[in-house]
Image 1 (cartoon, rainbow, N blue to C red):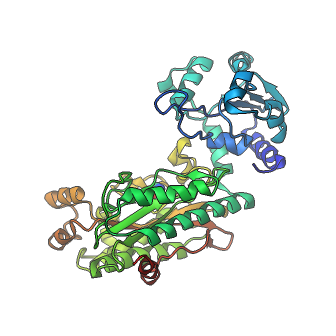
Image 2: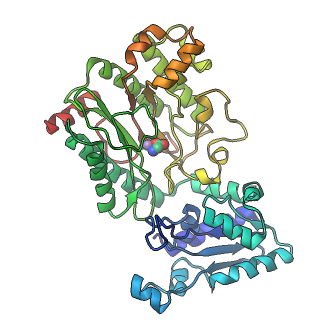
Image 3: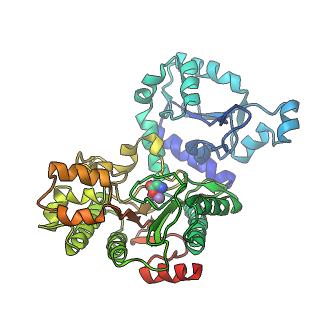
Length: 464
Ligand code: GLY
Ligand code: MN
Ligand code: MN
């Protein structure tokens, strides 16, 4: 946990931003995997963690801006709970630790909120993303679950997003810790991979490193020889010589800040000439994109600059053709690079995605595109110092997408469909790093993880 002052200062800033009303924070509950007493690892809600820091289930908090009052609702463990779960600090002590004066039993939330509403206070709540939150809001506010997203407070969402988007020095240090553990996971996978292994052996190895470092995974491991499936969580393939392994996985620290790196490496000691060529294009695009990062730049423009590099590289290989700028303007690159260049990262790996991607990644001057590929950007807005984001271009050969585009002759002026057929079993390559935007430009977080072809092949040589 950070210092008491960190949490009180965060809440004070939120109060200033909101100006009035009553802000409701619904902490997470345990979720049963197959029955209630066999839960998934507990994960506190990130906004609750940000303002209240307490990493325990079944808590609700309120900031009553109108009356300058903060209240933590929860219950101390019963003796029976203590028999199974051990002694825990009393709620009063936990509230003191984060500078909250008032503590009330959980069952008082409902009456408290009803009274506040009767007295005409504006109630601010965030869009719920768990069924337990939706049921709780239904009970407290008599508001049907399907109406809750629209009724969530835009002022509250905007205030939280503005605050959480700019990472403090202590948050950056925590993020860097996560990225360093994540780097260890990637180096371990690159050193350990051998033909004949199941993907699951490597997935287990890297998850163990995240847990050993005192935290957890930041998201389910992607470790696959089928890198063209963007979020592939299947780990049942056997590694074969000549294949590529795409590993996209990261640790979150004990304080729940995330790391999110991707590396792609050959199962054999060296890339094949074709893999070498595609890898170098992705790497060039990633390095080019990173070099453009600084405050004021629109991430949409960085994305498009990376897309142009990819299109140029693919044109040099004969896979694309025609005018590169026009190809990107028409979205032809999205056959190979159908996702966004990156996203914000913090307490969530896709930071604040539960609050609404448009609030986090877009602004009054940057609106979401409707074009295939460009429409999927999670981050497009102008960058500011303190933002932490990912830079993760990729090139994928997705057979179903290739067949559909070919059938429809989509962007045929820019894609050489004859050459494309030769790549239908290629798979995919992505390279991802985590970057802090500074007042002057940028800083890549964490210790370097092998990325150039020479570095990756040197590490793979250690496996043989
Ligand atoms: N780990 C998913 C992503 O890179 O966005
Ligand atoms: Mn990733
Ligand atoms: Mn990512």
